[in-house]
Amino acid sequence: MNTHTQQIIIGVLAERATGERRVALVPSDIKKLISSAKFLIESGAGREAGFDDNAYVDAGARMADSRDILETCDVVVKVRPPGVDETPRAGRTLVSLGGHDPVLGDFLRKRSVIHLALERVPRTTRAQAMDVLSSQASIAGYASVLEGARALGVLLPMLTTAAGTIKPAKMIALGAGVAGLQAIASARRLGAVVHGFDVRAAAREQVESLGAKFVSVDADIGAGESAGGYAREQSSDQQRQLRRALSSHLAMMHLVITTAQISGRPAPLLIDRETLDVMQPGSVIVDLAAETGGNCEVTRPDQTVTVRGVRVMGPTNLPSLMATDASRLFSGNIRALLAYLLEGSGRLNLDASDPVSGALLADQNVARASVAAA
Ligand code: NAD
Image 1 (tube, rainbow, N blue to C red):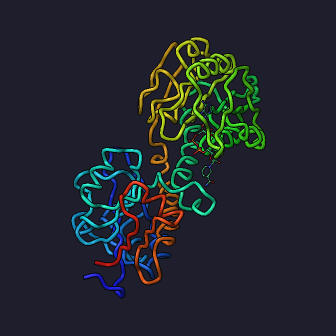
Image 2 (image 1 turned 90 degrees about the vertical axis):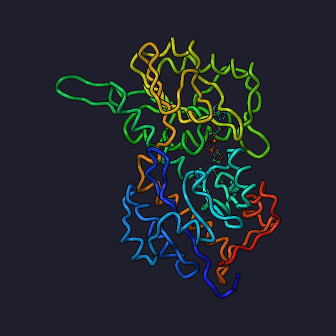
Image 3 (image 1 turned 180 degrees about the vertical axis):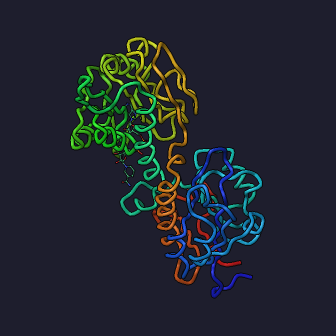
């Protein structure tokens, strides 16, 4: 029976996806939420990210196994989309990524699980603190520069030594959103000569404010952004013109970080084989759009493809490489989301007319749900 006095129980599952080292909630955030909810953490959930079981117990949580969590918890939290055996019971709530997967959406709806998919957190000022896409994109942008720099045969900074002077490497970020701007800032800190490009006019000022050069292209690509300020998809002819116009700029670059995305669509193709043919052998492309098809024609998710000496990397989970801080930021987003949805009485209040929970409930066939302790 539901009562108003019992505290809601929130469970955190360990991640099972290969190579996934992050954890959805870290001990310091549990400490901040412990007066509003009870927490069950799967043993070892935070180990790979540097948070051991004792730290969770010190924060007030209880350790449990996954079966116990799925049986007992009113809300189950994890980073990656759940596997079949990680599905909470009917009527319970799951908070995780997976909002772009219609098969998962159908499966969870059939099981009557309320899925608060993190991709649906609205990108508004109010919800900024809950936006895992932004926090993780920022880490991916930083990590892409380090990964790319390691694969390059040249140094990023200028170096003057008794043996001679080394010129700084040239870097460009294609797509200057959250990940691209962080890549620009990181490459600049490492001493590269940095460039940026985006179809949105507003990106120019942001690129330049980081000390990078905004690349202007001689192509008719139409209005780059929609009324909401987000990138608009180009026609196939505009995309072709853009590729040819970018080609001469890319021929001069050593490190290319591509981050161009159109929400809900395949990534735009910015680098084709014709461009790879004019790029310098030894240059490196890190394609952060690999998961949605890639910005480069030869990109393969989680592989490195070499064409005429140009290495094209397609990492799909760079935040996991920086698991400690990626988890801290992810957890901070989850804490902000839970704090917003939890009432003092310990209920999780979901209401379709609320700007945040309304967006999260958008495809749930649920107008209002008040998840209380079972
Ligand atoms: P994203 O990951 O969807 O796309 C990355 C970038 O690719 C975008 O800047 C987009 O303009 C660009 N792009 C798309 N097609 C392109 C093409 N053909 N060529 C070159 N670039 C192309 O975007 P994002 O990084 O998540 O965010 C984009 C913008 O939204 C940023 O300006 C960001 O500041 C803003 N934003 C606002 C909030 C908020 O207000 N809470 C949250 C997140 C992002």
